[in-house]
Image (tube, rainbow, N blue to C red; front, side):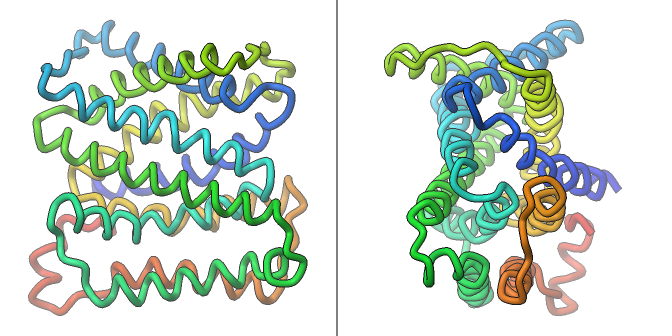
Length: 302
């Protein structure tokens, strides 16, 4: 039941954050918007841990991996996603992001020696075909360079996200609770973003509208503090590959909102592409043989 609650919370929260990111695109530079988000999230989470006397300091040996998690999950990936939102609808970014299941499988092999099964290769083929169908009109026919930029940035952001999952897995294995890693990670991420702001001479623009401010608070408190905590708790409980299955359902929520608020238009090809992308991810978690199913049944999010 706990896994199911964590899983469903992650899907609902992160399925809605993409539209909130789109609402922040405008007069405020991307660097500043991402900084606002994680500085606010860090203040909320650290304050809560201090008040409840649960704030713990990672050891010197643990710090490098906390920093790696910070840069991958709370800095570089979102710089890519925010920039991508300038080129393609937020719902389509979430579709690319759903390939995190495949990224995680490959990276788990590279960093932890986990086996890559034939189903992973099949899932990759289905997912790639689905993306071609979803973006095919813009890319193959109109050769829209903005679409290429949006897809490339989304894919790069997803890679950073997956690498952050690997760092989080390492942190959990070393005894760092996800909420502790998040508190320090968001703090380090905000400091890294602030350093980039000053190094690049990016102007700090105040939140221009109530809509922007509301989106920022939602992304900081709900999308970051709650969303990342529930997701990384899943990673520590059931593993990075199974936890990433939550990303399979993000596009359903995100594209629904994109249709309602961003005037995203569905076609037969895009609908088929979404189904194939979801199918590619679902293949990663197809029903196991009876003997294996018994061994993992209690760990699946259901």
